[in-house]
Image (cartoon, rainbow, N blue to C red):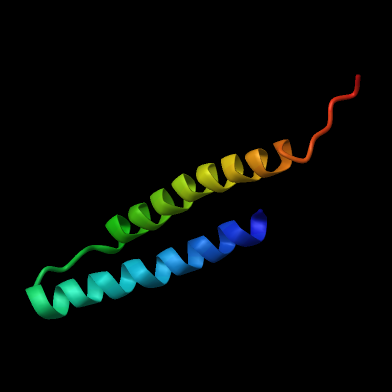
Length: 67
């Protein structure tokens, strides 16, 4: 799970910075670094919630009743 969250974090970091550079180049709109950081952290937190839920559902299917 940690590996997936790190992958999502670095992917979000790259994608958000590329989109910010594209917005500056094509639209002339500068997006400040703190806003970029907030978006990257928000994507990481939301994806960690979904990854955690996915892992719980995946392991719940493997459980067997004890009785």
